[in-house]
Image (cartoon, rainbow, N blue to C red; front, side, top):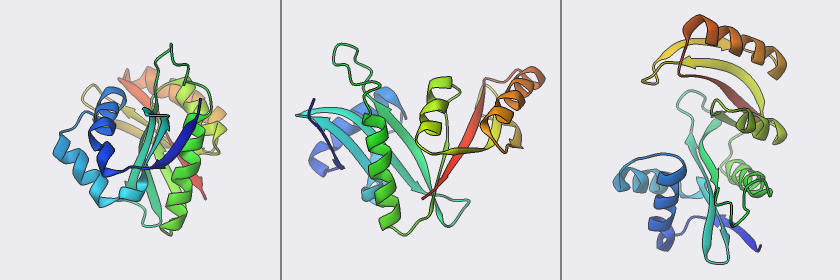
Length: 177
């Protein structure tokens, strides 16, 4: 493996768009272009030779002036290539953090998928849980609860599942950089 991480280039937009739709957001190509053009330095991707193997992107938070919202991160799950769990996601996060700092922001926030591996990924990369959100089948919010640490949060998460029978109960993580 010869992984290179860089900001997205216009010549790679179609490839990045396809990857993003496969692993993360399903949006129109125009919406994708608007996202990149608004914050091109917050769109990071990883290549192995000529193969796109990961992306990471975000935008300034609408809620917290000094924060960036990490909107998506994914690494190829193609088992025959063996990219998963090789540090590519952590390298993408590190490069994303550098871009965030260069833009003058001090904090990154992210809503993590309701998945133990995803939660552990953010914990491993220095993110701290600050909140839980119980969401229904159409992403409507049932309840938000502040949490002070992950272990306490896991207990609250189970309680929110029993209380609401939601589609998911996600952690909101943040990292001060």
